[in-house]
Image (cartoon, rainbow, N blue to C red; front, side):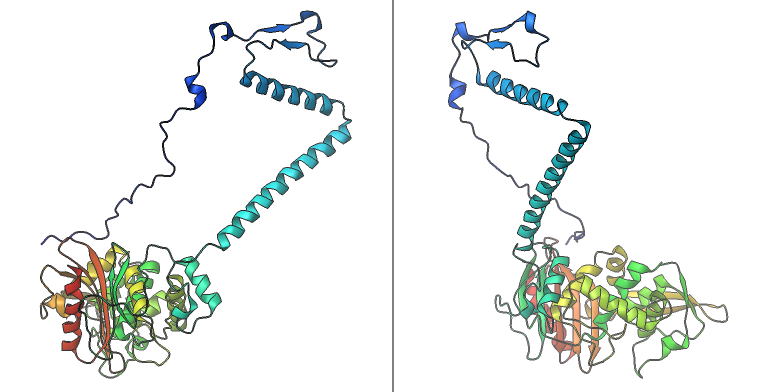
Length: 419
């Protein structure tokens, strides 16, 4: 099956405004009599220079057209205005001119105010325009965010049923059609959940947005201060690693040491600065149901998101070609230089079982990649981009699965719907 580049832009439908009419006006069916083809105009030559006294233009009534009458009235109006302005003193002339300018400016101001007032009262159709759909967000926050979102997003209710989809207890999930901008299925889409390592999508976004892929980062002890048993690439203090290699370690193998090093690099040496950047970016993309406290996704009660916000993050991330390329890799050899100057290679397997071939997707479905996440509080989580038999792109998300088997079994239930 051919995989279509879902990032390719398609021209939108051509919208026609107004209709063409083939009807003729009554005047078009009439023809002028032969003796009325020409208008007759006579001018008294003796009084040609005496325009200040009176108009000596005489137009015969015979054959007088409407266009000639209108033109004559306009010309007469402007001649009178010119005579009036010439009769004014310089000071009065300036006063009248300024009053005219002020009148025009006031008219423009009134029209502009009316347009803006009308725009403020337009209905909001973007996600989160209803404060009830935003986790702990005020109405002002919801309205502010809705203005930042475009209509080019999937929007739907917290729970949307379709077909025979039934997921296991405790899971939250959603299936998004990226081409038709439709929420096909949703279960607790706006409820607060813990994202685990799916957080690293945001870490990658900020790295791609503000970093340089060829910059070299030196691993420091702070990058290695992690919980026991954390998923890591295996860096040591003093290792020299490019941003590109760190990003592979982050997305392919979900390395927490890579996440910490990238956060320190992008944040200018300050983890607090990077965390602030994460939350600012969340607001910018409309993910107001989220709040992050670290770049890894390790458990923190104040580190949370929603299924819909995960969609917003992944939808933003796939705008970057480097992200799309890396998320599809099943195996990667990270290359870096040790503190002793030795070149070292580390083989990394993807944490996505679709990419490693451990799990097969439904027939005629191609899984392109995405991000996994697992903690005891978040459960087993997966957010992926896939394509159906026609190359149409979809984002599917499941969080809170009890086991890896449950996660991929229910993900296949979702993916079965895209064909």
